[in-house]
Image (cartoon, rainbow, N blue to C red; front, top):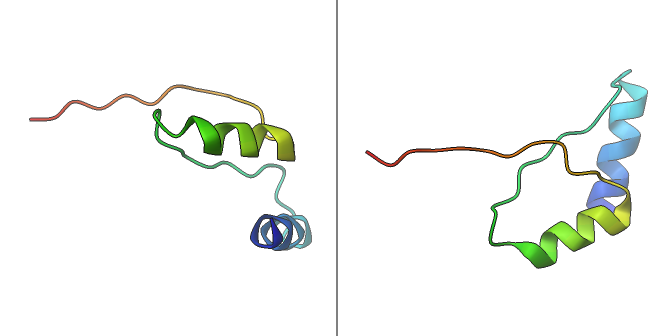
Amino acid sequence: MALLNHSKELAKQSGCKAITLDSGLPRTGSHGFYEHYGFEKSSYGFEMMI
């Protein structure tokens, strides 16, 4: 949580309006952590293995 708090403060100081992160679909525990911290789901990612 300390890293997220530090990142949030750096972003504010830099004039950023948002923080965006990626988390793999199977990482449901991480998703819950981010949502508890205040992040909201905003998109789905797609990839195709070739």
